[in-house]
Image (cartoon, rainbow, N blue to C red; front, top):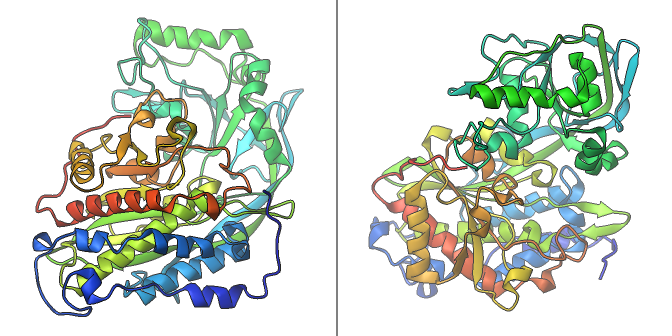
Length: 549
């Protein structure tokens, strides 16, 4: 049932009343009284007494606030998101979890500005030929071409930059518009050159990778050729058409932090820029396959290119919410437990409450913070520190977690792992009638030890069905790249992603609290607790010994 926007007059009072958590008594916690100065070893403590403070009742209590109409769908930068941030911060404070942010007025907030913008006029001219935004090309994110300007074009193969294969060798792209092919090269035997197998790499799976490489090389924009025909281009990019008419949120381009504009272009537009024919673009890939390595550009690029992609922009302040439990003898090392607390907001007067996505993960983080705080009060605090990270802007492109990893409160080199929770307590079609499962994604991608710890925690304590279907690098859903853990993984920080899969209410206004199985969410949250307990208290830091895609 669709939910409409109701009167908000009681929202502030409701939030205030719900902001404090039930802290277990000493008898319920099974340990020393809260506030005890006991220096008992966490390894000697029974973690179950603290895992048991994570309850379905508490998860439901918190979620009925976060996913209520009063919070207006928690749209990034809007009033409902601010109310949610305050609620989460108040929960941390009420449970004795300090805020670690040293700058700004609120130690729980990592505040930053995004940019809310909408497209104006957009075109590219190549001599007398004119290509139109929304027909021949699409711009993703910010654009540096606010006014018409002449662009110097350069071709950079597939836009890949790795030690063993780089399209940027001896190529100066500073300040230029870099044309690259989508995907990645193959060898003559049909295997991918980068992986050496039939498994594609990040260069194919994550569009931001090529834009990041171009930015690192100093490019002003990267123009990715999509499809082999214009009809295929339209098919591949049709979902971007709606973006032209509605505002979007992202990081803006600044003088101190330039970002290469990410532009998807049609084969006809690419052919004009490269002075060739659309059907001849595939010849480059064939040349690379034959050579088994990157080859020099065969194209004589156009020299009379002008670009304009005007954008109407305004700053949009937002904030990540951080709680921190300091460790003991290994306190300089950090475990991150994350979830995103934003959602879709209000569309056409209808509230998208996002109970499962990702109110469920957010309340799990809140319960985990309370559990570890209680352990510390009882003298069983973790050896390593734990950061409870509720991020904003995930629905807009993993923006909050990207901001944190680009501006970390604690050094990334000291960050041991990220455990990310995004959608728990529901079942997808593959698990109907089987609530005791969870998809685990990425636990083995960077660290075999993290995967073993997760498996052992589940076998010892929770006995969930751990489903690794979406961990397959060839899975078309690409969930490994679609939630906040990925911004840690790309910095080679081991991650585990807990996810219940997609259902009919995904990104719909029907994603409501009453459809959550809180007993299932409790079990998954306890699995995260036991995994984090092991990571935080083991003597040796887990090794980064893998590099799986």
